[in-house]
Each structure stands twice: as C-alpha cells, then as structure tokens.
Length: 359
Ligand code: NAD
Ligand code: ZN
Image (cartoon, rainbow, N blue to C red; front, side, top):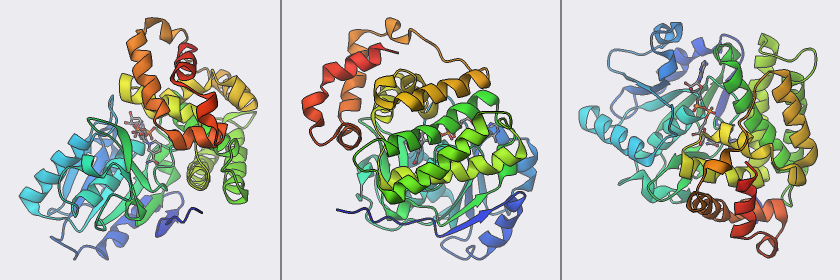
C-alpha cells in the first residue's frame, strides 16, 4: 500500500510571524465554548513571549514543564478532564514549545472529542472522531513533530503515538526568532533528530524519490547549520533549521526511521531518556548501519563542543537491557525498513541487546 497522508492545512513562515497568531485565532473563536486553551512550554513563563500571547480573559493558559519526562497519556487525560469540567470544549488548542508541547497540543485536541483515556488510542487510526482546531508554534526545531501525523505519548504499556489524519495541525506558525534562545546542547540534540530522520529515511527499503528529495534538502541544510565556517546559532541558520526540521519530518513520513529510532524508543520507555538525546546516544555507535552519517554527526558534536557519555551500559542490569530490547524489537516497521523484509532472520532480541551494550 502506498502512503496517503494529510499535510498541515496552513503554514506561516518568517521572522516575527508569531504576531500573526491573534488574527488567525479570531476566525476560529466562535467554535464550541468560545475559548482557547494555550499549552506553553514552562521555559517561557515570565519571559517576553508570555506578554506577547494573544490570550483573552476567557482563555486558559497552561504552562507545562516538559522536563524530565516526555508527555504521558495520564497527563493528557487529566488536563482534558479538568478543562472539560471547568469550561467545556475549547474552540481550539494552541501549542507553543518543542516536540513535547507539539504532541501535547495534538493529542489533547483529539481527546476533547474522543471518549475515555488517550491510552485507548495509541496506534494507527484508532481515533474515532475528528478533534478540535489546533495550532502549533515550535520553539525548538528538529523533531518534525510540527508536521507529523502522530502525537507521541508514553502510556502505562507503550510509548506510541495517536496517529491519524486528524492529528495533523490545522495551522503552524514558524517564527525562527523563537528558537534563538535554545541552549547549544539542546540545539544540537534536537537538530540531530532531523539529521537522523533523514539518514534513516534514506537508508532503507522504503526510501523513494519523494522522501529522498526532502531528506536531501534537509541534510544539506543540516550541514550548513552544524558544519563548517558558517555553522552555529545565527539568525540565518535558525531560519534554515526550522525548514530542515519540517523536511526531515516529511521525509520520514513517506519513508521510515530505522535502527537508531528503535533503540531510542527503548531508552525512552525504560530509562526515561528524552527522544533526541536518546537518539544521539544510540546513533554514535551505529557505524555498521549508518557509517558516513555517524562520522558526520561526530564531527558536528566536536565542532560545537558537545560530548556524549560513554560506557553507560556498564551500569545497566541484564534485565534493563532485555526490557529495552523488547521495546525496540516491537517496532517491526523500523526494522523492516532498515534491514529488509527478512529482518527477523537477521535481528533477534540478542542482537538488539548487543547493540545496547555498545552504549
Ligand atoms: P522538548 O519539547 O522536550 O523541549 C526540550 C527542551 O528545550 C526543554 O527543556 C524545553 O523547555 C526547552 N526549550 C524549548 N524551546 C526553547 C527555547 N526557545 N529556548 C530555550 N529552551 C527551550 O524537546 P524536543 O526535542 O523538541 O521534543 C521531544 C519530544 O518530541 C519527545 O517527547 C518525543 O517523543 C517527541 N517527538 C515527537 C515526534 C512526532 O512526530 N510527533 C517526533 C519526534 C519526537
Ligand atoms: Zn526522531
């Protein structure tokens, strides 16, 4: 079957475009109980951006701490229930932050119209009804969560997205000024998520001319941003990173991620490591799968003086490694893409445990 995916309905791009939000939202304000729910990364509490929010007195602004844990089904259910009980169903949800906030905004927009716990909907096309209007404003770039059709949540049983056409944002505002304050380590780890999306998308059986074109352009931008004389957190590179993140996301959507993301999911689910950092931890040891990509990522780390810990697996019990290996093994679409349709003949739980022992 060929992939048939929905894109974001509308995108604004450009420095200062954050200020377009008020006009965009006003056209939607009369829906449902006529208020907006803003979910904003706690980093912005007390910062200039808080004053620039176009929130009206009837709106709810909720600052959310996204560290150290990734969004959970429990967190989404609790916020949905609280808002529903106090004010009803909002006209829309506005998410301002990184991948975590993008996923919270996407997930909660679906959960205002779908009954029960979000845990019931972790998977592909399990959502029964369209959600409410949702607008995303990324403030750190790389995950591609702003463009993807999934809202990744950690539930009691699995880390898996609510994935369907209705998950995709109705509107995204890409204002590169918002990512200027990201500290260098997070700028690198999160940017490397898009780099790894592209390397993995390119190296597997599902790669095609469409996914390749996005990956090719995104990788070119990543090299300009992270390598060579013009690398670094400049306004010009921030513009490029926002676009690279989107294109990396589009590339993997039409292809697939691979070995690194499978391992990363295990690290997140069992050890609580954050997605982009977990990817970097794993990717540095995957030379035999992604040789050139691994060498280039290491150069980027050196250029920006960011070091990754080594020897982590020495502190992990066999039980922990086995648990992570089971999480990774249960992502057959990733192994199928990276290794081939006969991947089960080549990759076993023991193979994956050995990969974790490299860390
Ligand atoms: P994040 O949202 O967790 O934020 C990372 C850190 O950056 C936080 O400390 C945050 O406070 C800080 N931050 C954000 N914007 C900032 C700014 N402008 N200035 C200073 N600090 C800022 O990070 P992320 O890496 O973007 O997202 C990770 C999440 O995305 C994970 O939960 C992962 O599962 C999810 N994800 C989703 C998809 C998808 O397609 N839906 C894809 C990849 C990852
Ligand atoms: Zn990723």
